[in-house]
Amino acid sequence: MKTNLVTRKGFNQLKEEHEYLWEKKRPEVTKIVAWAASLGDRSDNADYTFNKRLLRQIDRRIRYLRKCLTDLRIIDPSPQQFGKVFFGAWVEIENENGDIKNLQIVGPDELYERKDCISIDSPMARALLKKEVDDEAIVNAPEGKTSWFINKITYE
Image (cartoon, rainbow, N blue to C red; front, side, top):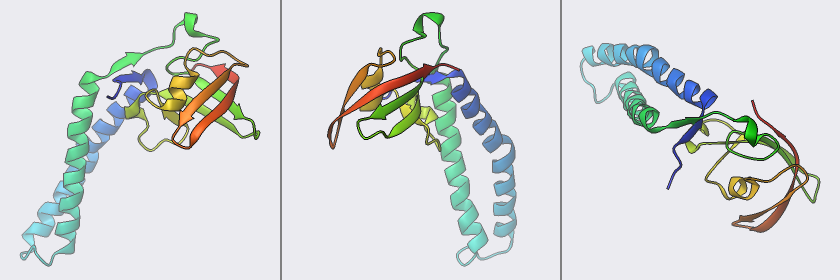
């Protein structure tokens, strides 16, 4: 089951994406579809087929965003959290090989097109929760158990 938490920044980005798709992108694509449809035979019309498919994808994303934006709960960091890993934290972690990662723990809806985040529902985030700097987190990953050390914790 997916967690319905979101950071304030993530909520605003999702809202901006909805507004962009609804107010700008969808009307542009609708005009192209209408123009292509007016040309006649739609079966051989690549403009019509491609843009009709694109319009369906946009509509699907808009429906998803509308539903998700009403269900999401915005979580702002509180001063009691500082020094420990909780939702919204930026965490710098390091493994035994010296590989360093800097990740933010966010809700699953914020992961869309982002590489510097992990979902609160992921095994890595679950292992990091409530840990402090210099603590070790044992992550039960599909490849097996891995050990990560926390170097730094910050909140926006």
